[in-house]
Length: 256
Image (cartoon, rainbow, N blue to C red):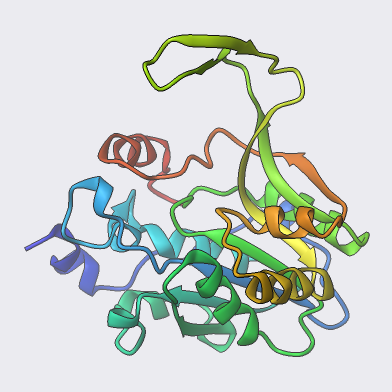
């Protein structure tokens, strides 16, 4: 059995505490809807268990993200998009949080389908939409606040980091074609936040044209919407392979 089935997993999970200085000022009415995409199979980690359900530090990977957004009083609802095989019977630990602001949705064939499923389940009062990958369990409160602030100003916003390595373009044989100027290149992360009208229009247009994308900012860019970057965090690494998982375990504080 995987270690998530032991007595620790069956007991109550630690709840997060946030210093008052880091708590956002409550909105008059919560107006942020969050879609956490957790519908992938995660096969590249080499484990039969869904990677978003594996433990990072003292809690499952997905729960890190759910609790991070539930810390914000301006969040009206967090929608977790799970694979169809798990959406009807989510793991019990998922409900060790603010269940009144939690909804489970069913993922689709492509990432864009899963995101749209989550957006459709958001309440009408969610005028700001934040989209986050469950594979980035260690998102910081500061990054979340930064992308939401930009979306409130009417722009799309993504967390990202500037490229620091030298980049080489190569041909099919591995021969270097040229060195790419990295001065204006950034590595996209999540969360990504948008005014609701913007991201809904982008997804509806993508459906009309049959487009898919690896991130939601790309859909908005194709329509000419303004999307900006805010500096993300190296802690918010994406867990894709087993080595990434081990790095996340090392970065996750046990009292998170």
